[in-house]
Length: 162
Image 1 (cartoon, rainbow, N blue to C red):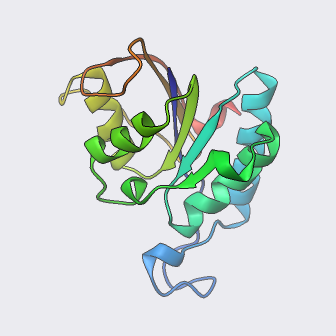
Image 2 (image 1 turned 30 degrees about the horizontal axis):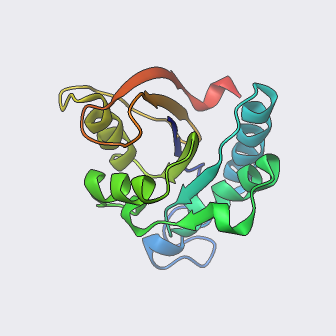
């Protein structure tokens, strides 16, 4: 299974764009542009996913929108996953993915949680993996299930690669 870890794009600061709670922070203009370029770049490079799990926070949902369009995902293939919200647990994310395994899954979330998930999947708490905003990492899991130490980091790309 290929697991694409996708950090949300640039968002408006708290207090701007009508956001009074962190949950409600939308993408700013730069973030909307980043998310469109990200979707185009991944599609252009032949990346396709079968399912997209997305944090419920507004900025993650908005980052996912161009990805859904680019990959032509059906509504059933896009899942809001509370475990990808800030403070979520790696095991809970793995449970969500393992309930309906696919060949390739995308996970749109936040820092530091995605960084911690990447380290957990490759089995090293000491790994210092850092995803930029709109950055992507690919972890390949040879077994059919995600679990601690089940993956190998294939590549990690910063936002600037798009």
